[in-house]
Image (cartoon, rainbow, N blue to C red; front, side, top):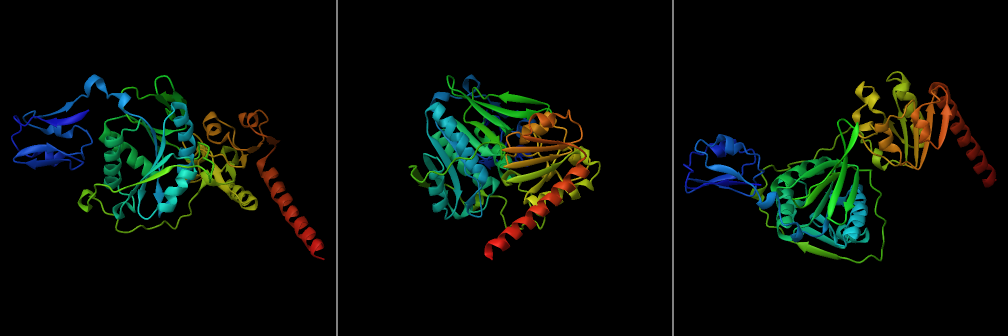
Length: 407
């Protein structure tokens, strides 16, 4: 749907300009004119005193979906390097594109990123649409949404996948409003209805208590933000061939209302759960927040990071950035150690794809044991110190063996 102005009715009072949150209305010759910045929120319609503004429905409630072809992946970058989630999206995008027998394209916005563009081809993209401009070096909502909107209007992709990162969660809704299509946020699974060329987007709903599969049958592109760590990463193929198309955008400095003056990095350590090869997680069985000191000690000994269940986050024992599960982060490490975690379905959904799962719980009937490769029934305050001591002994043995081999 689009916002329209009936010029014959417009009296040029400017009331709509004052309420527009997107600064999308200009007064030209004493008449309101809607620009492409419009997000179709409808605030101007409610404010207009003469009912000169209305929301126009697209014919048949949608678009001609036959005009739209191709799968696009937004290749998010920070400081000139694409994020790991981009490889995950390319891996999933490749499967979807093959199912639909169409082209997979990566959309890369930035400046002086030719090497990254070539790398995206090796990770499976048939084409990289590389938009090169100094104004795109650092992410801005206005700049990125305008450039990608222009590309969508011109090239008409049928699917657009975006990582559910901080930037993706900002960019996705803005784009979907501009294009007048739907957006399924924070997806954990994607499937394809090949016959109808529909993307089936599954995400947690009602606080993670059920999974909802959502369709966008009448509008294009079908848009989804995908939770990092859920999809399997695309493999690097040095011999994969594709095309890097360099595009110069129709973008001016005045199109960007909010300027990034400086990027200040937080002193707080980042918990990179999605990328960690080893995770040691604590649950309600710890009894109190002091129990996480023991979890941290084991994680440090194993060379891993600390995870947590929702219950411990809700009781403020640990920061939300450590949470694993449907309402936290989805992980697939090589080793996942669950300590005092019962194994609620919401938590299992976030870690059950780990290569090796070790569960420690004094309840022999805890659901966590059903997915665990190895289970230890016992008090974690007795088991974990024993594990740490055993790891210390292994270190001593390895040092002794190394010393003997040198002599």
